[in-house]
Image (cartoon, rainbow, N blue to C red; front, side, top):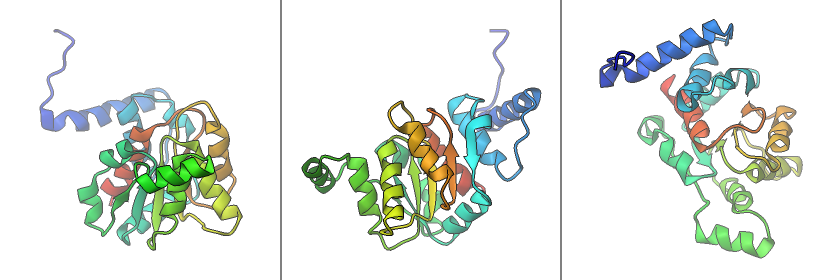
Length: 209
């Protein structure tokens, strides 16, 4: 028990961020001030310091995303897990809502008929929402591919993409699509990511307002 640190429950998160900051400094990792809250919250969620190297931001990404949230942007996720992890009460203070269409029966039926993933159809359905949207993709690379294809065809242009799907099939390639696009983004290069990472990024953006 001698190595156990006594921390009040209300102070645990604060202490965690102090440790993260200290360890980043020890590793010689310098993160721009604007991006630091997002990167540190992702590390806090995953205990993985590699995100300090792989999390990638387009120019003015933080300001663009936060301005969208302040103006009532909605969040669309590709999993119910990500949706559950986002602080909806805080988001609602600015008029925003969180959507996930993956479990919709109509989405499942259309996906089956067309031989595509539910994530693909979910993005198409999200594009019909008449509101500004931040897409928070943590699981399905096909969601990113669908958004990119709609943009390329002139059907729909996403205003902001958080692209952090995790896995092995088409994950890296799907992320690369947006790294070379004109759509504002927060992307994690490589295979790592997940629904929890997508939710953490959204929460970091909201908490910083």
